[in-house]
Amino acid sequence: MLVQPIDYFLVVWFTLAAASTLYVGIDQYRNNPEPVVMKWGFILVTLYMGPLGLLLYVLADKEPRPGEHEDFTRPLWKQGVGSTIHCVAGDATGIILAAVITATLGLPMWLDLIVEYLAGFAFGLFIFQSLFMKSMMGGTYWQNVRKSFLPEFISMNFMMAGMAPVMSFLMMGRDMRAMEPTELLFWGVMSIGVIAGFTLAYPGNVWLVARGLKHGLMTQRPQTTGMSNREQSAHQRHGTSHNDTSHRGKSSGHQMKTDATTPQVSALGIVSVIALAIGMAAPANWLNLTLSARDVGGVIMPQGMIMDRDTPAEAMRDMAAADPRLVTVSYDLAAKGDQDLPFRMENGVKVFELRPSVIRWQILPNVAVDAYAYNSQIPGPRIHIRQGDRIRVNVTNDLPEETTIHWHGMILPNEMDGPAEITQPPIEPGRTYSYEFTATQHGTYFYHPHAKPDRTQALDLYGALIIDPADPAAEVQADHDYVIELQEWLVREGLTYPSMPMDGGMPNFFTINGKAYPATETIRMKVGETLKVRFIGTNNGFIHPMHIHGGPFEVVARDGETIPASARFLADTINVGPGQRYDVVWRAQRPGKWLIHCHIPHHTTNNNVKEKGGGGLMVVIDVN
Image (cartoon, rainbow, N blue to C red; front, side):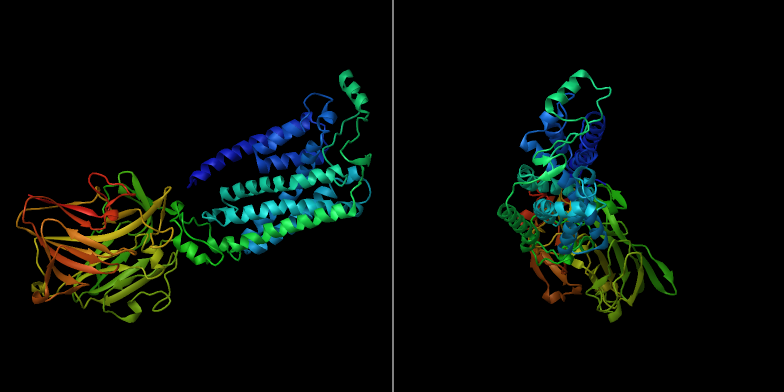
């Protein structure tokens, strides 16, 4: 599933890479007189580097016209390309194979880099150099291992010095899908890493070829039988036999001879080791290299989140976007949350069913969020009971992570309270847990998770719990009763992150009962009627000073407790913090459209923009 803009680019890139590789493979075997090992070198490098590999092939190795390969590939810069291609093909193959295996095994990134280096070096030395080049270099296999060791060591050091930091920073950046071999982004990072490794290894390979320490591009032709006069003449001019191999460097046939001095080789080797050390170790100053692909699980974190070498994996997972691939159902703007939750009676107990899952919910005509929701509603369904009722709530977890339910403000048995790992084990995905208690209080309450609440409640796990008093006379009466549940959202680039008051987690959308103004519901009443508003701080991060236009309201209850008549007071703004509840009664004194809104102006915008006079935390009371 394509979930980010980069995914679409990668689809195009790898389509071009496949086409480029197909062209290079066909052209090498049909038209180009390179030895088999170099043919496969260009094929693999084009597979890894895409159109850049094709460009290198066309500019440095593809025979322009029959019989001209020797002259065409003679310049030193092209010989250096051939040497680097050979190095990268072997080393990168070993590195990529190791990266897949270490990610699958869940090894930490620091160990991953070491294993990748060893695998790349071993594959390049023992397979691509000593084995595949044996027929060209002459001698025994182990003689070739000894001869190839030093140039391969230098070349591999530069190669990994380029790849290691690229892989570290891109794999452990915001989008941790780059650590998962099953994700397209992983292969995109590998491609960029190979390009960086090629770039850093190229200068050293030019010098190694110039000094006869490595092979460059070569020409291997069949016998002259059937060749055109032009091709035979060209070979006679070049002084090469038709099955000969020519290369840069002082040599006789296939045997390489070097004029490089020991201090020169030692200096280059030391510099390559220093480059390797910097490339492998420097990322540890900024990244937590103790983490593995299994630790972070392919999460995508918000822009602006501060990550450093001490950031734990759990913090990354908590701030990560809801995975759009886990969405089970989508709803349009007409869908409403906070609907009364039905129940069944079992032996005098009211039994309710709650099922949290991942849904897509529209908060504005052109804005949808990926959210965690109870029974596919935002807010979750309202549990409406009476004081003295015995209730049982069965919670079946369809989320990708653990959960519980806390009954906020309720007096109940401790084992029913909901804090994960304190009063109960968390409800794991696919499991069911039952809560049962008697409602001894009345008033405005709510329920929410107490397992990872900073993440799961911020992604919208909450719902109202309204308890009517056993004695109806104890209820503060009003003509209309309206529940307002507050929420903050962070939506960027099509992904929904849990909003938090920290770097990278600041919200850009705000909702009342799952909608942002102008998509919020309109309350309709007449002059002289009263409205009871139950403000519930179901949000996680901010205090919202909720204000009603058109005259003051009377505060009649706080946190579920009814305020005695003598202690009630008038106000026009009340600060509703996370977890707080206020019941207020407002009288419609004049006709018109009167607002209920948060008095922080930014919280009445949608992504910092006002629409039709506002946004976010706004509701209109239409009084006739």
